[in-house]
Image (cartoon, rainbow, N blue to C red):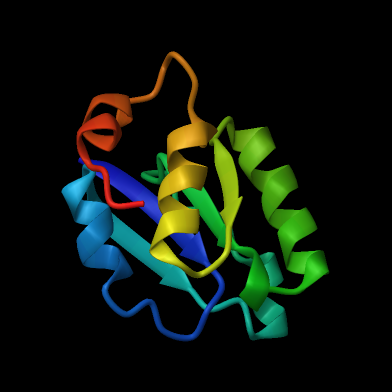
Length: 109
């Protein structure tokens, strides 16, 4: 089961259902608004961290980047639009991408 941590934005709308179409069965969402969320750890089951850059503060972004790197979890950045998210995920992984085939089949942008 592939798991994605989305950080930023108050509401994701239809984004989780679209993420399911490219292979993510679990989408965990953190708004990033509360100061205490900086201290929160990345769950162990997470395969990828997606940061929505237009809805997050710089400090939390820096902390997330360090935590993801320390845990060996890929991290990508996008605006809160499906095209931006899709492109960020598609470009995030290189040869070892577990989602490359499903992303290549799904053309919406």
